Length: 221
Image: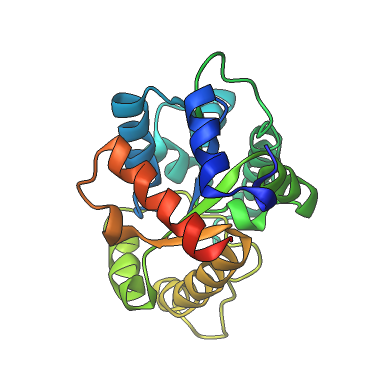
């Protein structure tokens, strides 16, 4: 599927032929997994979750266990575990060309997808229509609060540092907004289509597809 050549008519043809391949990218809590579940439930898409295979490889049950295993960047084991996490994410995201027998595919990436190898991101763009669920700059403060209330696994990818005399919490609160701002910029660059995540709120699978299609007409023709 050559996404750079995709038109609304080609989008329709892929959907009808069950060869449509969409990947969702964006911040944690932007709705990637929920939107993927809706497409699987309402529109019979094959739903592939990258973080599901990461969990299995680490013999962990859920995101909370991954967050605990990974820890904060001040933990002595963090750098090695972050390297392992990104290694696994590269491996599973590199399966963007995977077969979805007789079904359209929704490829559910993790929040750290934009930190992966350029070759892997190239495979993602070559094999799927990359849709960014954009939370908007105004939502970053709320995402920061959510992170400290309910931590999720985070690959900091060099965006953390602790100044002399600075507490761990102070350094995390100083650096996390920098990381989120950089991620938001990179998601927008990576994506074929940027959609405000609120635009998809409470939409069915077919309505989701129609909104994506409308952005193709607007942005790609």
